Image (tube, rainbow, N blue to C red):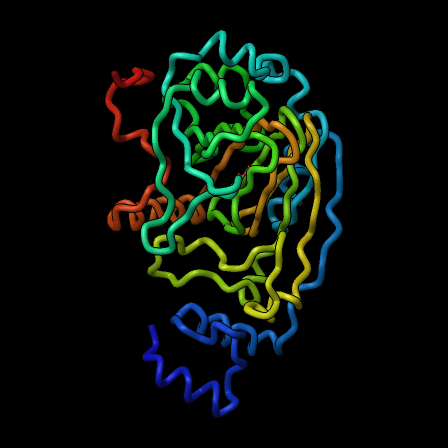
Length: 317
Ligand SMILES: O=C(O)CCC(=O)C(=O)O
């Protein structure tokens, strides 16, 4: 991190544009300011997202290589999840299992810029009780795939685009209406499947990063932004006015390809169940593993509590 005095001098001296009310406070802010200068202050242009029917691997690779998101129809048409993920069926099958959740405040995922996100465990049946009453739990069910409820992976089909990936991971997401995840990005490629209910996404390309007020590299949430795309505060974050998000609503049956490092923020518009596959190959797989290594070293949560509870699915007494 650059010493504050030096950064302030550069800003006052007019060499760097000030980043808004928060100013340039970290090495990350300074880095972003320099990148904006390299781009001559010009943010990326908005992009229209295409919707296509189940592409061949070759056609999918065109989008992946260009890092262009795309909506794909028909990928989950034959998944048992489409009928198995009603609240009643989930209760029947898994009520007594443990699930991992992240606490929410007024539906928004609780995050801490120093310590990151904190998963906790609860009984699935207790979470379902609240959803079945039509209420919003004070947490978001974010279940590392294949761990406490491995049967969930029987309800989905690994897409052919990432079947042979060197690194792969999955998550099951279940939430009440009006639950949201803040603006962040992941290193891995992502195929995100909406199964139940609708979910709104706000997207920005990686090139918009210098306008999005990323947290410092050494914070607990280095891949999160301080900016809220849904409720923009342009007084505090004036640069973000220059980059408009791509906004879209995913319906049941939709799949969204979200390329590596694309920013995303979400809100479930109804009771919502989703599943996603992250994957990486080659240099990207090395980067994902390096990011995991650094997070582990720093004691930050990566995939929730999976490594902490030895007994799969057991409910604590
Ligand atoms: O579904 C959500 O609320 C967040 C999804 C997400 O962040 C992801 O798939 O990386």
